[in-house]
Length: 127
Image 1 (cartoon, rainbow, N blue to C red):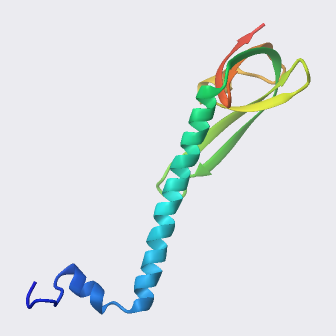
Image 2 (tube, rainbow, N blue to C red):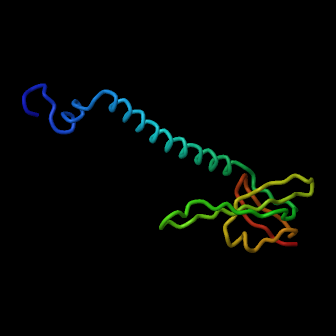
Image 3 (cartoon, one colour):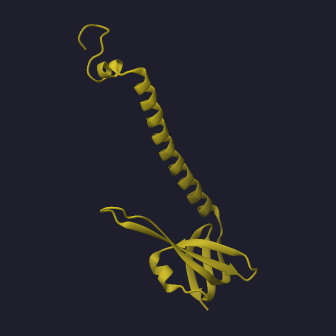
C-alpha cells in the first residue's frame, strides 16, 4: 500500500469498478457457487439414500431399454446414459441406470432375478 488508507493492487482496481458491475459480479459468483453446492448436496443425498436402502433381489423381466445421449458438439465427444425398465411379479416397474456392457447383455423379454439397492443396479441373472 502506498499512503495509509489508499488501496493498491487488486483492491485498488475493485474500488474503481462501478457499483453495478460489483453487484452483478457478486450475484453471478453466488449463482455459480450455489449451483455447484446444490449439485454436490443432491448427489450426496442420493448416495446416502441408496446406501441406507436394503439390497433387494426380485423376480422380474426386462420391459424396455433406452439411451440418453448428450453433449458431443464440435470436438467434444458425446456421452451416453443407459437405462433398463424391469417389471416385477406384482406388476410394479422400476427403471435403473446401467453400464453400457450390462445394457448390451440385456434384451426386452429377458426373465430372471434382479438385484438392486435403491436406484443402484447390482446384477441381473437370467432364469
